[in-house]
Length: 92
Image (tube, rainbow, N blue to C red; front, top):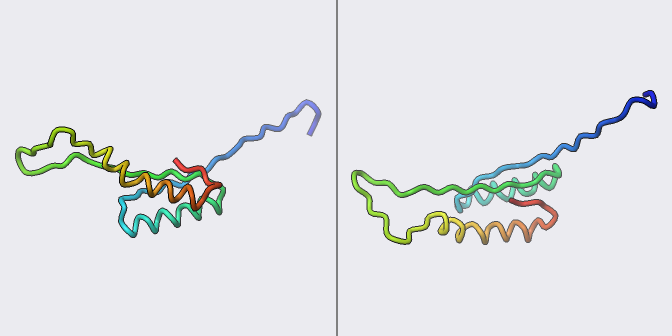
């Protein structure tokens, strides 16, 4: 390499994405994903989804119904546990 050439270093960042719903199977997948992220020096992205309730015809949605808030209350302890058990891992 001549003195006029330069070396470009590109940082590669990997992430592992896992979806959870609170079931035993999803929690097992989450633990596997956390260990795999540690093993591969990747970050871990945890995804949880919610949807508005539906029914046949007209559906009543009570005032103050907050499915996102309910999901957050369910998954925050799970997130905290992963962060506690895998402190070196970047978790979002």
